[in-house]
Length: 294
Image 1 (cartoon, rainbow, N blue to C red):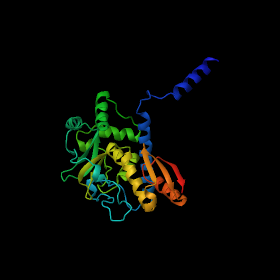
Image 2: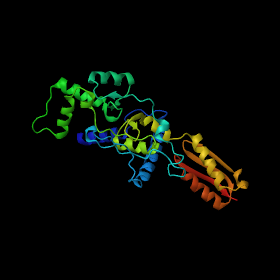
Image 3: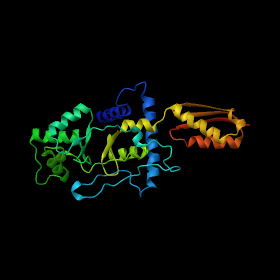
Image 4: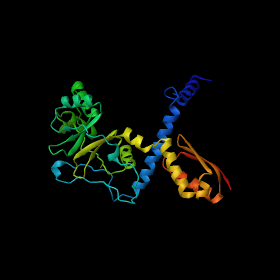
């Protein structure tokens, strides 16, 4: 084997190894991520049929006089959102924010004090006008420290970044308009918005664009992925709905890491319907059918 082949073989071997040691909780962590992505995918499918109802409220430039776009903010009895967790149920209240005239050094102190990577920027009427992040501050400090200036043929993105870096206040440094969500949006919809926008924290506003809270990806994840106890409770509800009173006691159900195991002796048609119903429950990873025909 020549030197080039040795190098190629070694590179393939390195790529096949995990980037970090496999921890005892790695399997459970990956399972949680898979279930989270599944919930987001379901939300995306539902959202595709709701194009006429925007999910987020993108706050317009205050100088334009335009009202912010709004998203559904409440559930009606019997609606598709009935029973689903809402953003208002998991958002952080009160939410840290800063005024648009705050100097950048004070912004850095606030981010450090709140231990967050980004904070909504509000105007005098508490309307969300943007978001300022650690990245915005780092860009400013980097440009000041390096003295780098974009050349005549510099890219448009670089020029915009340089323009922001020259600013001194939150209004100069912030990313605007802000991507926000309404408190009545479902957690799954907010998670899909966070995934699309690559945001860790999303400001929550009322229909007028005033800040009412902030929701983080961790809170969305926890709300989307129920524990086994919650899944089992819904499975038992489906069993009561599908099985006759005489068959209820014949069905045994166990849930572990989202995997549902059904055992017992019921009529064939009942067993088929029950397995189908349980498989449609959110967060169910797999249904093991151990039912036998009565």
